[in-house]
Image 1: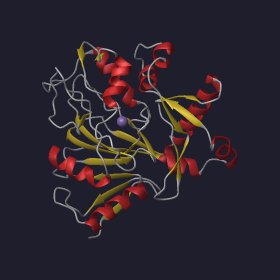
Image 2: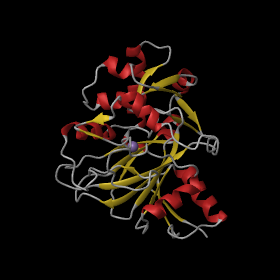
Image 3: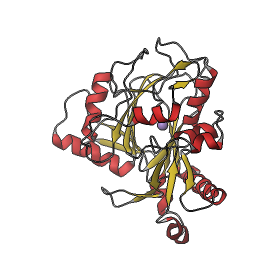
Image 4: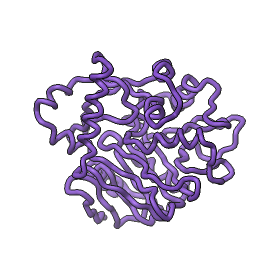
Length: 315
Ligand code: MN
């Protein structure tokens, strides 16, 4: 097999075709698909024909799939815990009108990397489109490897060994969700390197995101100014493109080599049904279950965002 790869930017993003993802893949096909991800950071597959089962089966070629907390006493739209709901729909499939929940989801429209607020990092996210709004609702991607490559050497030296604290609630606060600094500081955070090495390619990326709150050992105002400077740097036009979806399209991104953000659309008017699987970085851990349940329990107390209990957001 040989994939057809059409670059989107010279160094980042590619439209990939020439393989039927609904069929079992042999070792050579898997290798080529993974290598193409390593090289381009974001891969777009059009009109895949995948359903939930196929989405999960294909995603597993990249590694262990994270699972959303078990649904207890609430209804969910999906029967598989490997499917994270990135839609604007409630459990009955109706458009969410709850202002608080909409505000919570608004945080996904800020530049971020998925799950950087978890100690166990997410490598790949695979987002499959079921329904797309007629206008807006694209996903934007930024090339954090080339952005790192292009930094002045003095900045590379300055940031090389820095660590950053990430919190889901930091990005919600930035998006306007009513939280105080004390609220954010009292909830769990994860410590991450600011410069992320990629073993498979030897490249490095800027591991920054809206979830990033403080740089360890630096005064808050100074750390936040530096984080903003780096996010602004990495989201300059030469590092950025967007993907428009039709049903069946799937985008795979490497969270350790990119940032992304949801594009705006009229979320009270149009349905947008996107479903995501997420791959845990590295070898599957001995513990089979996921820390998301613990994270949200510690973060939310009663698990309520908006007026009803909600599953873990696909942030
Ligand atoms: Mn996301």
